[in-house]
Image (tube, rainbow, N blue to C red; front, side):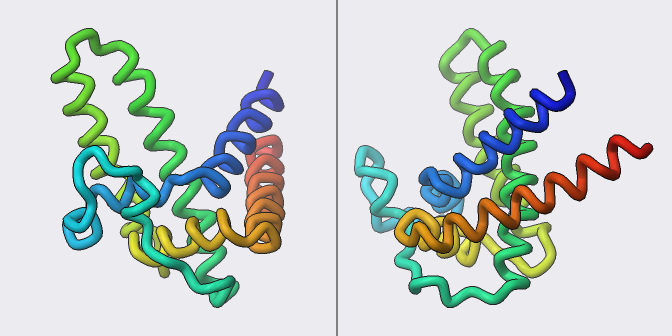
Length: 150
């Protein structure tokens, strides 16, 4: 059962890298969201990314931040699903977006802008995306080994 949970989490985090996570975080940063109309496509809010001009340290920080963002998303998903009124759901979504941005900012060597750039670059560059997925799998295996030995 624990192995299925790890596999599911790795699949979800891999989707974080490949899917448009950046626009969700960009919505919390007023300087990037002001150019986008409320009904506009989220990808318009994502910053343009250079083709894989990121250091190993930045990519490692990105993976750490993505894992933290995933934890926030998991926490809030249950709370949002458990809320009946639309206003309550919207408030929780906004709170989750703020928490995700905070999680990124609190990750050493990472900020929301760089996170968004790496996310956009990974979507555009399959080679970078594969590299990030490999880094993620290594990190999860290291973490799973530590959990199993405790």
